[in-house]
Length: 169
Image (tube, rainbow, N blue to C red; front, side):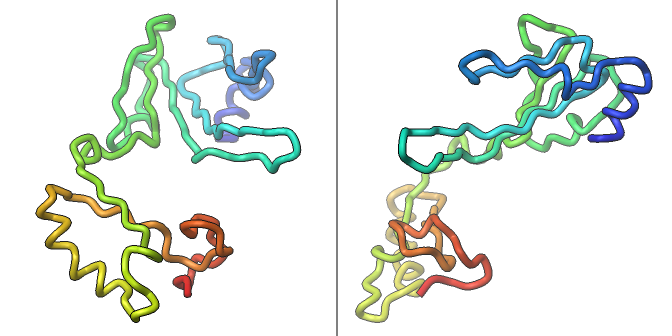
């Protein structure tokens, strides 16, 4: 956070933000070791840009890095993340902060396209989905993934949410 940056600059270290280097193709971010005091967090998204199209942005991801043996930090709070030593710089420990929960590794997921799973024209809705859960469970499914049910712009499957406080029509 900004306090760490201010402390680093006051101690005569380079501001980590000023030390960042991006490779020519933009695919790699490098931070010199001397720019990292005890810890560093990197938040990023992947962006795809096709000519003439709007950019597509991935889900945000984050990683935390700390020097091995440094004082406790936000890394210790990473609920399900696994700390690993990076082979080229063993004095650092890296944790993926947005690591999926452990239970997802063994989950059997069934995706429900809410708008088409039940017959909306016949008045079916969430109750019709609920009625089918026992049959879905018989298939060995233990997790339902519902496509978004919030107010959206009408594009396929409702992922372009425009109203987080209301369900779609």
